[in-house]
Length: 332
View (cartoon, rainbow, N blue to C red):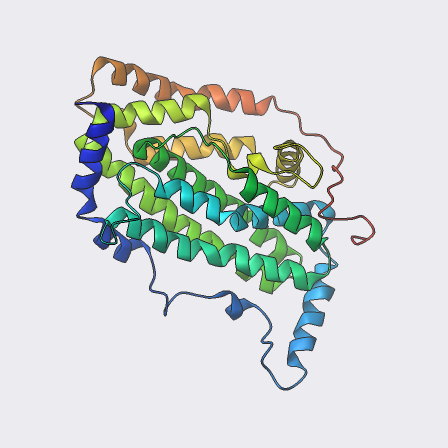
């Protein structure tokens, strides 16, 4: 049996449990938070809307340049959701034509939850008056129009490794932004980012369980997929950021430097996530591996120590890069 047919067989076998997993990890639409829960109510007939907007703008003045760069980058990454949904809908075993396909249902409902993140952050940034929304909108359109290749092809095993990793990375980023906002006295923004982080953690646990279930039925090929993704390194969606007039990916390095400089997401965090996945999936104890998969496991078990040593030697520029998203004339 070919690898593709084997994966389709495994995805079909696991599909019977997807509805139960959706109940476990996703929240009904009528129960989950919505962006309007964290934003001023524009329907009010008194002046409370304008007072709340004024408060948002005043508190925003206390947040530094690098913070705004990271918040904008996080928002743009969330707003590129159409790319992520179309990518996942093309994964082997996911059928968007068959309305009863469990994996297709998962992708649509997961997308529905994720959609709220960019929505609430976009509206907050607009109200804050501290960023150049037109330049942000151009970058967002570029990110969607350019498309991306995260190195997973249509392989569900590789895609589930990617999403397990990426959802935990976004949890870390949003959670750290929430802490910085709280320390600056911005409770509204802190709560907003904290609840987004909570969604990302739930989604991380979901995709991690998908991988766990694959390990029980196809351990060797799941191990090889994990090995492949970590050997080539996880490419974050933000890797494809570019500003207007810039080349694809030209903004990513400076965005990454900014995130590292203020401790929102660092090279050490990357290795920590790898270590957490190794522990979560109990890689060291998995049985039934063929010789190739055993070698892949050995590589994975040794990888964090090597990467920690590399991360310790990384140097981050002290000076901030000037993004078009956030202008010095605005941030004083």
